Length: 322
Image (cartoon, rainbow, N blue to C red; front, side, top):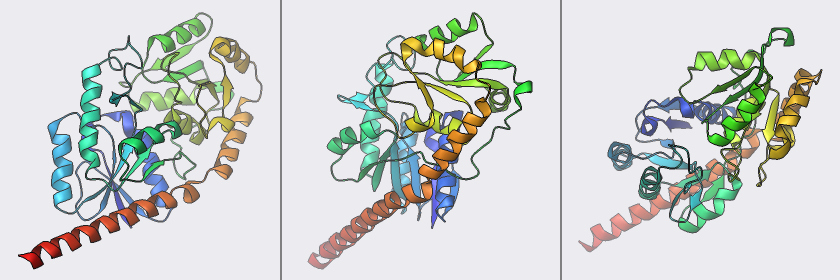
């Protein structure tokens, strides 16, 4: 079966690249044809990551649905009250923008009316979505192992001149940790505007990669970041979160208060490459997407088929009555 991963509602943002590659390879591992499209493709299933902030983003879905497109939506943000996130980081320009998040949430509720399923990126998010959208299957999308994902050419230890590496929104909490480490070590922190060629090179030269919380109040792990590093065999130190994640067993975790101490100790480990490779192999064996994805696809397609039959029956009744 052919699926399209729709990216048009994200305009030209590079922030979804890792998730798009994951979805594409997961579908292909399961024997499907997967394509990436900036437009909605009628007559096929379109998998769409949530991000509807302009009228044109919803218009593409509406027009595509009218022409026969089907949709699976991916919920990327936690529902808090009647919005997304709700000031998860009050001091950050993006995460404190209440109007922006409200628009995304309200628009998502409209997009859901066109969907056959919702997949969310964290298990803890599923109950909130299921309560709000009881007529749709809401399921947690595991980030399991896929083939042909790795993009980083890991260098030998002798060529690594970056002690600590982090990529993501540079919130106050994250900057505080990075600045503390930078007092005595070489630290690189990249944001969403970093060119991909630079990120790839810096990753290959990094000794310890970091996974840091948005803020002390952020409880939901960044599964996409953890998955990216596991697939690329990075040596990853993960700041522990309050809520669990299926990838927890495959990464080295440290509590916030001890993170800097653990980071210094990680640099002293003589076998970081061996540890990273071992974690990758355990992850690969435990969480193959060839087992995790098919049940979600089958459920979405079955729901879509029921919806189609119900629509056909309604049209037939109306025509007969006329």
